[in-house]
Length: 208
Image 1 (spheres, rainbow, N blue to C red):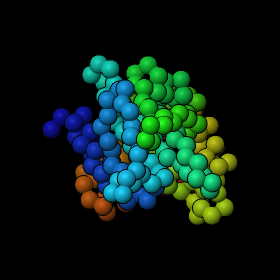
Image 2 (cartoon, rainbow, N blue to C red):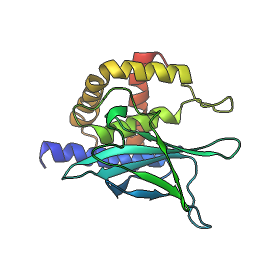
Image 3 (cartoon, one colour):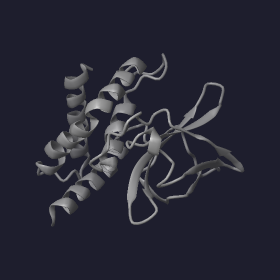
Image 4 (spheres, rainbow, N blue to C red):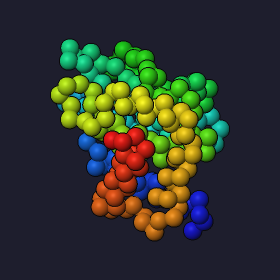
């Protein structure tokens, strides 16, 4: 199998395994059109709990792009939706794609707060970035009741650092954990190994 296809297969396997392990990822990767209306309307059988919803967007042309939607519900029951795009806020939900979120007949804005200020994705590793950020978001402390190990202050430091080194960092991670490994990431134990490896790299870089 050609090198590029092998890497893509490993990343696809990682999506399945890692997203099943992480408690804050609520669904596996969904494929949507570039102008999709994302229906979060709940019924008795269909629920959309707070958390992350990874998407592969079929952009205009033959390109595809990975992003994540986050649903948050405040203590008062207010619902907000956020979008993570590793290409940066400038390109988030703009030219290549435009997503809309709907609950019933009401549409909701997609806040870009969790997208980086600058692009971290010059080498086109959006699917891998989604996995890495889902791993990070899993342990972010949002409020005093969270047991996360990453404070909001530390998360801002991570973003600021990735604004400078994100492209090189993700290339290095891909080279070591995808290209050079014999692991195919098609089992839960291998998914756990990848998660541990990501946390190890973050701890080395940020002292978590």
